[in-house]
Length: 124
Image (cartoon, rainbow, N blue to C red):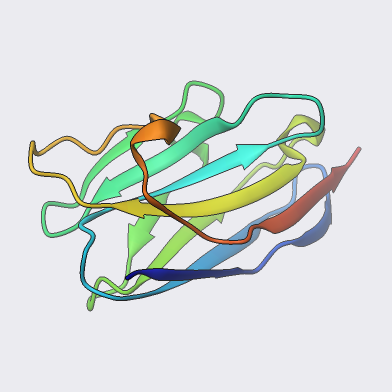
């Protein structure tokens, strides 16, 4: 079983920065990602990382404006959110899964484990 707990959300003005964290426990994962969902919109992949390889993937809406990283132990996932825009306002979710192909990706349906989410609000 994997447990994921997000933190670091909050309210910030456009142009500002936030750092999200996701503490993970359990061993049945090697692929971790951030997704977001704004009211009335579909869940969107933000960034993903394959543990041990540090291979990253980014959603088109953020590209590398939001670098994703893991701590050395691979148990805490980070998302450095820079140059925030009002359209970045959403609930942000941490997700994890086991991957055997060497490709993590940002397809939400492939992720088995999910955190409860942390709200990010960007005011213009």
